[in-house]
Structure formats: structure tokens, C-alpha cells
Length: 125
Image (cartoon, rainbow, N blue to C red; front, side):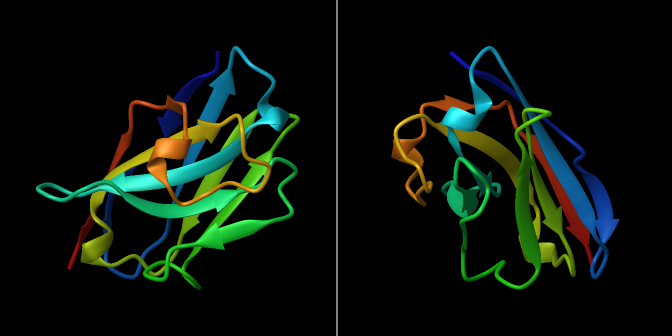
């Protein structure tokens, strides 16, 4: 069973950048596709991005495509989400998640078995 811990959230101004990280332990990290999701107050959790086990394949939600970049370092058991040109609408708690069954990752939160505790990202205008 893998444990996930996010870090790197914070408060920024619109247009600025932020990178959040997710460190994994307790499992074989390279055997999991990884995803990032977010949940804003009063909203349902939504898909942000996912990355394949090897890191060569990525998928993004339309609202972040071209601004966010997901990557992973399997040697360091860590997945990253680089967020550029942040907008107030990006304000949310960001969660990383691990999917042991998919090679490429999916946008469905029900496919992910393991979740971190989340990290807050706040973007002010």
C-alpha cells in the first residue's frame, strides 16, 4: 500500500507560477499511474492531469492544458505539477492519487486507490 504526501501549495497572485509535489512511500512507485485532482469550495473534485507509469504519456483537463505540466521522477518516488499562468479559478485543494491498475492513467477519480491529504493553492486577482 502506498502513502502519498503533497507539498508546495501556497498563495500567489494571478499570472504567477507554483509547483506542487507528491512524495510516495510504501509501494513500488513505478507500478502506479499518477493523477492530480482538485476540489474548490462547494464544488466536486475534478481531474487536472495524469501521467503514465513510465512518464512518457500525459493527459490534461481542458481548463489547464497549456498552463500546467505534470511530470514524475521514479528514482525519487515523486510526481510534480508545475502550474503556470495561474488564475483565481485555479484556487482549490490539490490532491495526488495513485492508480495501481492503469498503465497510462485516467481522468476518473474512482480508478485511483490511494490519495494524499491535499495541499491548498490560492490564487488572488
